[in-house]
Image: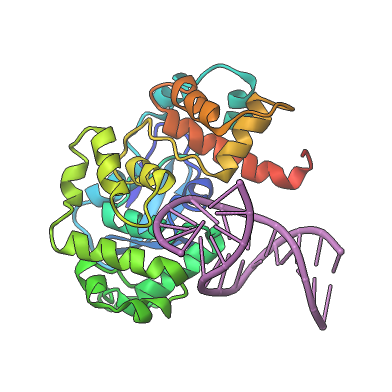
Length: 285
DNA sequence: ACCCAGGGATTTT
DNA sequence: AAAATCCATGGG
């Protein structure tokens, strides 16, 4: 299957920059699992070439996940025209936001707290190996694939058992979230239809979900375009790029983030995040 | 206000 | 070779 594209799509930047944790680069391309579909992706001229482990008759699950129908230029046009944004845009051509499954996204980001991307990957992968459903047998490239484990399955696991996936103090948080979702006390499918403030408040009811993780879920799973996850990298980017040499308090930076970047602030945030992380190797402090 | 909890790759000593 | 650092939530 080949998905045509109107404008740039950088798979490496998009799949590997900390919004999703199960993609890895193989000889054949970016390999991962979307829902129950093992899939391998590579750039192909002005499109994306997708190979699945099993025959597939409709592709909405993939185009929805990759957001290939989004008009990126329209989004970028709403960004503020200032020097930091220009630099971030120039360094991250084709960076996109994915539209992920809410449960996988929520669970992954509960596991992400005080972890670095490399370790989050390891935890998520061992969780999938241990509790995910094996996908049907297929060719050698897809043979070991597993789905992300359901809330119901994780709700049956014990805290001690979960800890063998190296998630440490996050185990009770993940367990509580799984149980709440499995029991229907939190309806993830319905959150996306609510107002973002309300969805955010309900996510933050869960132990282990603070403002940053809630915003990640709002942005990466529900597609609320102005959710703005403020992590240490984005704070660093805001301080360095917009207020160099000044000591700005957190509350002020929050207000700046909420007002400066427009209707697609979350998208702008991802560009700043990616830009500052790549810039760290090139010297400036 | 500070300190700890889990932990493996990365960086610094 | 050993030690410090990264990272975001909750609890004491």
